[in-house]
Amino acid sequence: MDRKLPKLMGILNLTPDSFSDGGQYADVNAVVAHGLTMAQHGSMFIDVGGESTRPGSQRVDSAEQMRRVVEPIRALRAALDSAGFNEVVISIDTTRADVAEAALDIGAGMLNDVSAGREDERMFSLAAERGVPLVLMHMLGQPGTMQHDPQYKDVVAQVLDFLMQRVAAAQAAGVAEDKLLIDPGIGFGKTVEHNLALLASLGRFVATGYRVLLGASRKRFVEHISPATCAGLDPSADRLGGTIAATLAGQAAGVSIIRVHDVRENRQAIEVADAIRSRVER
Image (cartoon, rainbow, N blue to C red):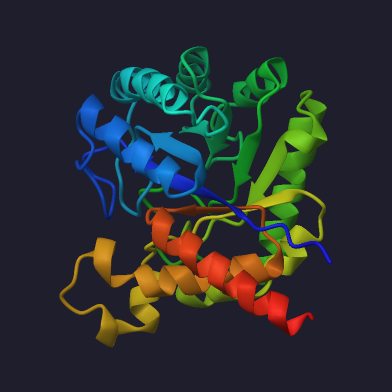
């Protein structure tokens, strides 16, 4: 039986307003130190973003995003290579092709687009030209308004249909099938019930044959489900247990990449769950 474990993608937000770690990595030295720590803990991807997409966030133009991410990515790539982490891929989290191109030019090797190419369709041609992986995520509306009463008739079917349409558009633009990943967009225009339905149905996304990326780290739905365990605490501390529960659901469903803030703790959970599963299958 295939025992392939999901790879971890560490989150590195270079923003002042991200919901749980805004402003923590404001200088290049802090970025490099944290990126190296995530690689040491087992992250095979590091997702760098210069624009927050938390609910209610304000948009950031391309020039400001590039000001935030270009030098940190350059320094992090050099540091990773010097430390022997050549296989760790830096992903650029942006909806703007000019930002993505600048990041690719100085060491990034993957594109993560929460708009799935709707904001800037040149993202598709860029991914095709460079031959890099491209993550297409589902989001209802825009970050500033996406949590204003999101409605679906069948959230799983509608999110799946959207992602398959965006996959088809990307392939029509020349992106190779094996370079595409899909992300159901936990927390992006979804209620708690919508998020739970998607987490319970991750196997349907995996069954498409495309690699699935799951990003549920420190999301607010954890607090809604378990308010007594979160009261008065910071999101960086109070939602770790719920994050790990979502990670293990993703592992059980066969997702390929799990995007997390806390790499060490999630890796530990994945490895222990796999060890238990190996005994069950004997």
